Every structure is written in C-alpha cells, then in structure tokens.
Image (cartoon, rainbow, N blue to C red; front, side, top):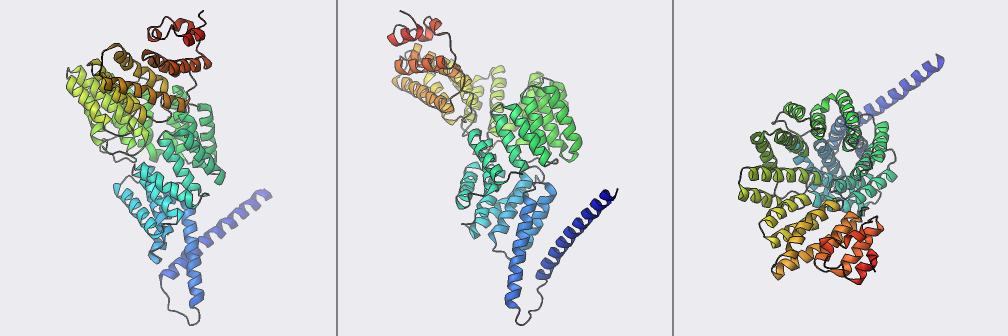
Length: 530
C-alpha cells in the first residue's frame, strides 16, 4: 500500500510539473504577443528570449505532429500559427502547418477540401521562404501526397532527404508514397530507414506491415502491425492492417471479428471502417449484406482521401452487378468513372478501382449489344496514365477479336511498360499470348509484326527485372518467342523455366507453340531428344 501511495504521489508530482511547464510556455508566448514596453538595456536579452521561445514552440508543435493523432495535430496547428503570427517569415512554421493540415485531410479527420488547400498553400510558402530547409520540402511533399500529385511530391521528399538524410519523416512519407505506387521493395527500404532513425515509431512499423502485405507475407505483416499497435493502441492504421491481412489471406472469420472490434473501439471512425468491412462481405460473396452496409453510408458523405469514396462506390456497384441489378450497377460504376481525374497522379489502388469501373462498364455495354460503346469506354480508360495491365489487356482482346492485331499489340505493349514492378507477370504473360498467336498465324503488315516483337522484348525485360519465382512467366515468354522463331531467346527462357521447376520439357516438343523450333538442336538437347 505504501509503494502504491508513493507511486501515486510521484505520478501526481510529474503531472503537476508537466502542467506547470505547459502553463509557463503559454504564459511566455502570451507575454511576447502582448508586446510589452521596452526596458532600457534589456533589448539583447529580450531578443534572445523571443528566439528561444520560438524554437521551443516549434519543437513542441513538432512533437504533436509525430504523434499522428487528430487532436494532437490540432494542437500542432495552433502552435505553428502562433509562431507565424510572431514571425511570418519562418519556413519551418509554414512547413509544419502544411504537414499538419495534410495529415488531417489524408487520414480522414478533416475531409474539407479547404483543409487540403491550406496544406498546399502553406507548403509552397514554406519552400518559397526556405528553399534550403529540409522541413519545408517535407511539408510540401506530404501536402502533394494528400492532393494525389505523387510525381512532384516525390521530388520534394527527395530534395528533403538530400538536405537532411537523417530526416525520419521524409523517409517515412517517401515510403508511404512508394508503397502506394506498388514500388514495394523501395518502400520497404524507406520504412526500415525510418525505423532506424525512430525505432519507437508506431506508424513506421505499420508502413512496414503494409509492405509485407503487398508481398503477400501475411504472418510478417501481422507481426509488424501488432508491434505498431503495442506502441500506440490508438493507431487505427495498425488495427485495420491486421484485419486486411486476415482478409487477403481469406481468413474471413478472423477478419470479420477484427473489423467488429475495431468499430467498437473507434466509433468516431465508423464510416471508414464500414466501407472496409463491406469489402470483406464482397470478398466472401455476401453481396446482399454488402449492399445493405454500403447503403448505410450516404452517397453525399464527404470522405477523404478520395479512395474511400471510390471503394464505397465500386464495392456497391460490383455487389449490384453480381446480384444482376445491372441498371443500378451501371449508375455507380459511372460515378467512379466520372469522378476519376483524367490527369490522375496518385496511388495505384485508385487506378485499380477506376480500372474495374471501366472494365465493368465495357461488360455491361457488351451485354446490351453495344460493341462500339464497349470498346470506347476501354479506350477512354487507357488514356489515363499508369492504369493496371488488365485494362490494357481488356482493350487488346476487343481489338484482337476484331482482327486488329497491330492495335491489340500496341495496347498490350503500353500496358507492359506502365505496369507496376509487382505486377502479376504470370497472368500478364498469359494475356499476351492470344494476340501473339494471332499475329504469328496471320498474314500481317511489317509494322504489326515489329510491334509484336517489341511487345515480347519489353515483356521479357519486365519479367527479368521482377524475377517472379514461378516458372510459368518464363514458359509463356518462351512460347511467344518460339512462335516468332526467336530461337536464342526462347531457349534461354525455357532453361530459366526449367531452373524454376518446369518439368514438362519433353511434352513441349508436341506443343503447337513450340512446333517451329522443335527440330532445333538446342531444343532437342533441352528436351533430351536424341
């Protein structure tokens, strides 16, 4: 009992000291705002006191920022504004203001577009005032991420790291951006660097969990999320990451339980949690339940970042389509398409959702016997930069079926070049083969043949770069190359397929795709044919 009382007294004294410190800080700031009459002989001391006070306030505001919580970001905004009121030319204060507003918008706590506008304005002001200040580029960088303008955001964060390689937040935000672009290996490197600089960072471990999840390493992902949750029990990111890992691993019972617990513990985040919970129902083919849950979220609800609205509309549209309620599905798919910016420069998940909408509308129009409209909506989607390979493949299939092999090969080639590094290259190489076979079997123009060979060459380069563990991608490449009698390339990819576990080389001798090279000495040697 005595130990308990002593501990309680110690905690009370600590809290009292903290309260008095904060009160003293507020008093000092208030005093400087009041502009007291100058005291003779004290000018130099007064200026030093103001300078120290400003640095203290900036440090205190930054401490609030790195807690990554709604109320703490509000406190940070208040303190940064206080510094700006005293010194409007301070780049770090403007940078901190940009970062705080951007985070509140990016994490859905202040979805007002005006908040995003404030973040961008403050970020640009910070860079104008302090172009050689690392914090200024961090502030503008995260504001641009929130605005889905990843190309200039990456440039700003690169500049920040160039100015200060030990900037934890620059590495962390850069990792967030790269992860959203599906450049997972680079994102993981940045997450690990951020954790080297700040080992107790809960958000850094949550980002590492996202990287593992992108690699389908679900056990490692859950371990990282659990470590993040242990460091910060109020970090929603970590909790949702655990649920998502269970969902992608198809452990739907565990995922459902996780979402229910999260909504109970974070009632203020109910809308975003319900949108993600509804996606679990879709994955589990409970489409009626999913539609009901989506309907509980108003279409007019202001959500940030925009990916949450896209997920809500797309999930509802897909569920309605599966329930054969096509007119309603078409309405919601159209909303996704109409709201997707033509110059979009943000995360890959947004592009995936938009691509699903373009492909779904193409299916719906085809079912209505409107082939021209079906193809046009795919063309419209492919005009956007960096869309998923599946969208280009869908357009290529329409063109191939119409006998327009050159256009089909061109669509596939663009899709190969714009695909993210962690594309499913097994599926991609499979989707290329029908067009390659069509060109090889048909009398086509030299331009079409050249385009198809360039497609195979580009695809080979991307597969080599990604180095997928399965033999299937290499075998598919060998098939395409054999059809065009690209003998050295075909044999090398067959050898690579065999190194990765392909055991059907003797049967390949009777495969129509390899008939053109089956009598080649190199092929017969691989197949063990005398």
